[in-house]
Image (cartoon, rainbow, N blue to C red; front, side):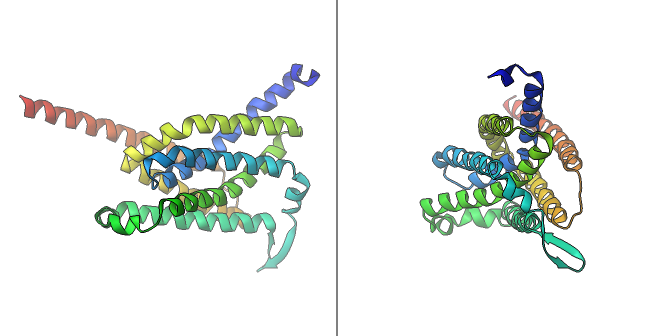
Length: 251
């Protein structure tokens, strides 16, 4: 237990946990978007299972570091571009995220009225099929995000215990934050579209990363934060206008 008194261990733990939380923002948003399609009574369970799977997959990858490191070895070459196992995972995950986010944007923007007007078509799928289908989709993206997260952790810390503790702590924070974030996104359609646009950018970054085009995620986070700030002002302005209308109609 002497390592607990080492300040370097605690610094590494807090730095890695904070980074894991930041890297998990896109994961939370993706889970929030998917569970919004589920009945209200199933959403909390889906969030917990999704984030639980994220924690298990990250810890499993941490305990198989020797295998994870082999994923960076070249498997074959296409047009002078070396392709590794990690590249294939990032490419597949990025394309899946692009498809899912684009499809959700279409449903939210173009097909929203049709979707609302045809509840029978939506109810054709059983609740159980919809629930487990959502969990499978969350699991697919969790693996991709976990790979990115673990490779980052390995580059920062060389103590497996610190890595596991940071992952558990970050997932605990995400579980606490997932519901309010999900409720807020679900209550504001414009924020939901912005979140989906954010996921589209993340998917594009994953595809670019697969071809060794490195774009810092910080650029995407700053752009998204700016867009959310502007939309927050719009929401406040709309609320004030609505309040003024109520007051004027009441008088």
